[in-house]
Image (cartoon, rainbow, N blue to C red):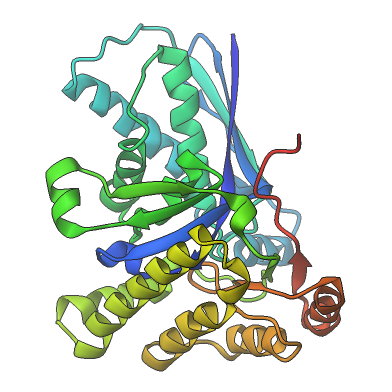
Length: 334
């Protein structure tokens, strides 16, 4: 039997990066981009490479292009770590597993290293395929914590729960990562929101600025651990912005959230060193009246716009900067 499972890219609408620091966020799925894992029974357990795992190239220029686009690590390490952690979870919880082997393959069109959660999408899709293959059911609210452990504990990738939550719940979700609740229950408080309450939103991205989430989060983590007042205060402010946006969306005031998105980025700019290319994207979007902030750690932005005329102006300003602009698909096509 063949199992095919997808997980989608995401945009952190508001509150990030406080999700890794007991804050609050609102995120939505971007169905335009996805990671798909295919699993089928085979005599041996095999994990097949994808384009991002290439080790044979036509030239030194081709190797350099590949590294610039995908980094030094492909998806095989994500799948191997995901399978290992899945097996250990089943063992720990006394879940029986049959002894049949399988082959795993993956493919993805999520732009790499631009803050759209491409790595966690591969692991999430992998776990979905494994759960079907072994007939295992795991509570929905627990899966993000397990996927995060694959990255944090197995691979040493610093990250928070936000990406894994939205990729499991899909649609749009308000997340409260209350420290005591997580300690008590192993997960945050997740509230599914109606995506129809969103105002017109755009996502824009470039691979020219690609950098792994480690680049930003390692610095913030150290400053947080040292109790730096500006960073600790910022985490509380980002969480407050997320709460306010959630309340506005629920109250039908989605068209009023743009200034809060801008505030989210402005706070980030005050406490973090950002590349000029990332700042140029933000300022370019704002120059036509749109709001703008990072979707994640940089390389992609999300914001609100008023109408199609403003969206066209966005494209006119950003596309010459080698920035693609789209209206993200959040819900499945009916």
